[in-house]
Length: 253
Image (cartoon, rainbow, N blue to C red; front, side, top):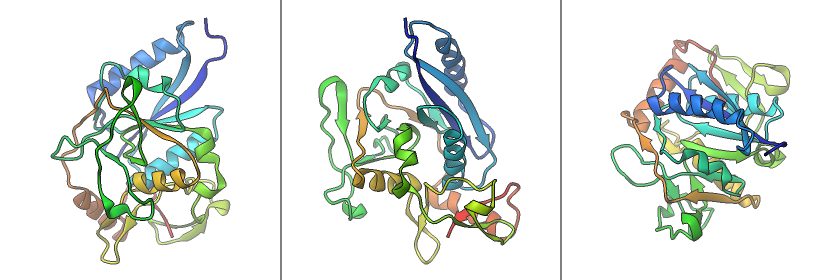
């Protein structure tokens, strides 16, 4: 019997208000397991809807998490198809723990081992799993990823607190109670095109600070994404630039 359950906050970011059937099933099982005296974890589950931008929605989730007493934050993106053994993931000991997650149009797991953490463009290498199919990696997508509180609370994981909002105002996080925690940042080239996602940027900085990133290679999530990343970025930028974003957008300056 577990008297002191580890408390995990599960947040599903969704830009369009829908989630996969497997996530609905996961929510139901998570609530049931929270009341199981023999299950080692307790879950709080929620969604964040209609927040423009990948980085902004993750930062909103981080803020919600840090205002709670929970021990770990579990991101599950709304277009994820979860494997049957998903509840084994929290049992892995690591600061950041994840599952392979296919990129759009391929079955390549979204895991990256950099030859040099300073050089994102070195690309992907083969990852050799150890016991129980677990491997150390330097980067991962956030589609199905648990993060320990210590990572998100580390002061060096925070960017500048200065934001621009969708109504053209520049604010400081300290003066805006609605502003998200400035942890995740999407990187663009001067042309505005995609340079590096907020997920890999987050992992690179966490790895430099000595945090571990573990992946369980025995399970692979499904991925229903049907839009090119640059196309998605263009839609967010357009909504931001012409004021059509139906909720406040935050961009770290």
